[in-house]
View 1 (cartoon, one colour):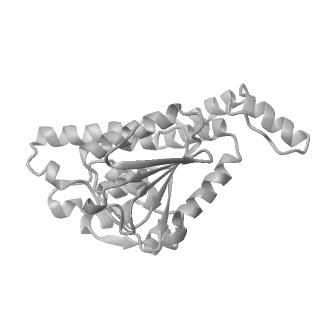
View 2 (cartoon, one colour):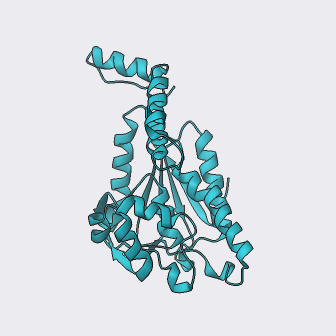
Length: 260
């Protein structure tokens, strides 16, 4: 499928999705959110794709925020629908995606951009990256999961400070806060992301999908994460990957997981 606002490249079972609105610093508008949803939906059913890397075009920004011009005159009802639709189509969809999603943050990740990065399963950042949720400076709050995911990642106090001050932190602060896992030089960012993807793909993708579901369950209201883990652990015993993995271990050979 061809897109107006994003680019796709598949190589060695890795799908790289690049948000490509450089003149707008890759800001998210409704069309881009829909295109990202469509790309992830296609990737879900494409057996060739095992890991997704999400990044922005150019050297300045991952995503510098939402496209404010689209909703500046919205009513409360329209604003609520904007947040609900965005979370359903993209942010929650990415967070619960069954294949690993790595955000490669190459510059500004502000507002909806940081929320998108936080929806990914983990983040790496270039050394010029700057991150923040500046929504309160516009008289609104983060609406794409920012008030929920930021405290989960950095703790309540730091999240409160970041949101209340509407300030930005740099890549090293983000690393200190556990908001990102690694910081690299910008020219090495995608290569490093691919190295991580290759490490992931040496393992059972079926088990990884179950692990994603189990980890996420701990953060869902009314869900017992331990019970989800028990259920997914039990299901693992019925997979071909489990048979291959245990056989390879017992026979002292490298596992060749069928992905089933």
